[in-house]
Image (cartoon, rainbow, N blue to C red):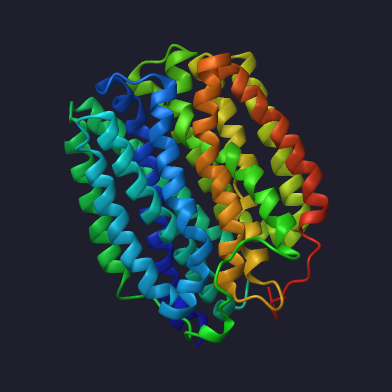
Length: 386
């Protein structure tokens, strides 16, 4: 197949990354409203974030095994529709208990979709025969920005939580349906499956690095709006600008990411990313007012933009490991940090304040710089051309 023939498949997979990002952006933008509507403290809100995390991580160890039997195309589509429906269900939450249960279900659907669509992206990337993973993740970031922006607009128009999620989820379902017609899949190879995909062998270092990266990124998704409100004194409408700035930065940098990776290498991308993230977080802590803090969140987005695509691509190309299993191994630990880190920040915020917990993220950014020197040394399959 020529690249021209593969363009519909690349566009379809990109659209599904957009859908997933849109859902996460919508979820993040609604969190301050859930907090106010249900009268929750930071710690109580964290129960919902923790449920979202547990739902996703609980299924991740078996998803590599499942995808080798079902295929990444079918799994991605089924998970996308399920994530859309579960997100709508969260919007109907009348109590904390309902909110936590619905978040658990949504987390499971999101985690399944994440591994499946990343596996499908590696299928397209391998057939394309060039590094294009960053571009897929750029559409995830673009979706995150669009979801936050749409939510901000609907809030301004005085839409309630349920009405906002109804509009957003309808759009997600329509895009998913359109993408189904262009996707390609891989041959199902059950013999490559090894059951649970817990990190092992050379994937462990990559997975640990992913965990720290995802803790920082997860904090940006779930706590930027609340940080700007409670620490920076921003209004509800302006509070979404922090996550929007973070998403815009990630989107811009990820669209340029494939060329940057080919030019300076994976290791340097991760090291530079950790340094920019630390600088941005320092600005957020020292100057928490809405404008400088938003600039800080933008810098964090620039730094983290291409770290995740590099790690997933490296895991999927490791010799002797099926792509879906490699992705699942990294995702199991990585998304444990992405989804489990924010609840810990919330619980810590109740004890020490959100500002102090954001300072902890600076330390993790420096750990990212240190670990990256070893994480990307594992042997991988190389493309025949770039």
